[in-house]
Length: 98
Image 1: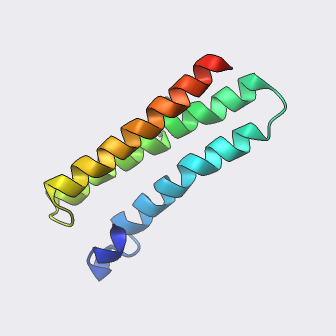
Image 2: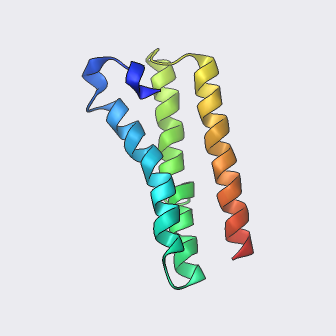
């Protein structure tokens, strides 16, 4: 998605969205390597956005901003938010099973 953003966003919104998108699976993977379920839950919560700066909440907000700046259309924003919500539901279900 971000490859089509204006070049002036390369180190701005584009970079932030890419970092947040990479952070979600990275937190899941890091948490999985921990020895205790409680630690795993903590990393899943970070990925989900249960903390103030959670990666999924960050990415969802950035998708809204990208739409407001006309970098993406409403359909693409909706697709991104639907995908983020799907990932959050999967992680939430995993947390419940730990």
